[in-house]
Length: 131
Image (cartoon, rainbow, N blue to C red):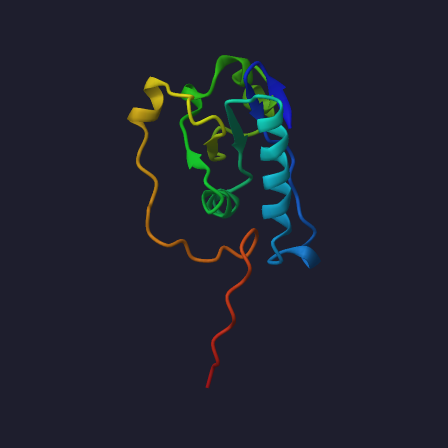
């Protein structure tokens, strides 16, 4: 978790293949969120490795956000200036409910349907019997 003013960047979260689909990613993200809240951060941002990772994080309350809406203090970090391709999804989770900005009102609403298990942060759904 890298801090930049009142905001944090969740960096380099990875779970070994043998531990995936057991809730480990969820536990790691929740621990980072607790740390962010205890440090008084208003929101966490991250750049997902790919759409699958972004999908997993939406199950944990993260919402896609345009990079142009990320606070300047974070956009000046290496992840935004060259390490992570612009094509990688950017997401945000508000930690402080009193944090309000104009950009929130312009974002696409999150899908409110029941999310399907993603296999990385959610426990995998049991496999269906095949004939």
